[in-house]
Length: 347
Image (cartoon, rainbow, N blue to C red; front, side, top):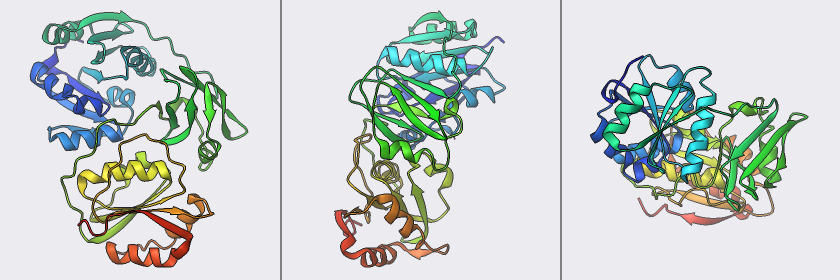
């Protein structure tokens, strides 16, 4: 299929493309027909940017596969190497369909698996990026998943749950008896690994895997949530927050240290407060940020899972006054928790 930049769809992956100004620049240079943002934290950065884009929570390969128009992927990896590795994964999931990828970290255009050369040439002529033709080499092994491009010391996570820290540039995990276990390259966080069993992680080839920070840029506040509305519960699955956000959401109950950090970061832009239930087991995967009226507590002598499940049972199905509901929960928990962040007076 013949194509040029102006008649194609630009599929954007990752928040750094917005934080670094890549998307705005590429819009000016390429004038794409549509811009679709894939990913949760990318959506947050996109909303903050104010650019006119569409959102899709599906992985980039599935977004591209569903399109009728020619499309190209835009990414900014931690390094040029990790950017190429990411493109390799996406291309391998498109079967015989080629992929054209703009990799901003290395100023490259990758034409994967005999991708549309005319489109690649059009993108190259407008950006000045060099073209390189490649073949994808990733073939998933049943029950096993390799997470490449890690930097030792980075947090590694699956479906938004931190499962440990990398001790090599490649981490290998596998399914065993209904659970996920580390094979290589990971200093495991067993509390995180066990969360993947409930609900069961059925197919490692399709889970969202990543290492390092979810986003390096700080969140920016813009909107303001209603004082009265529905409370959303997010239990160790922060990547689902947009898909599950109800209308008139007045606040989020976030269970888990990393989930609280992710929900706080995402909700800052919309001005939605968070009540976070943590147990001090946090990894730094996003810069801290919370909207006014947020409260974060740390449980004493218990686990956030247990206390979070208990508080979930106290989330009403009807609309509530957020401040009053939070006060009731804090009074109920009493000395079982200590408040570590209190922004109730920052409205």
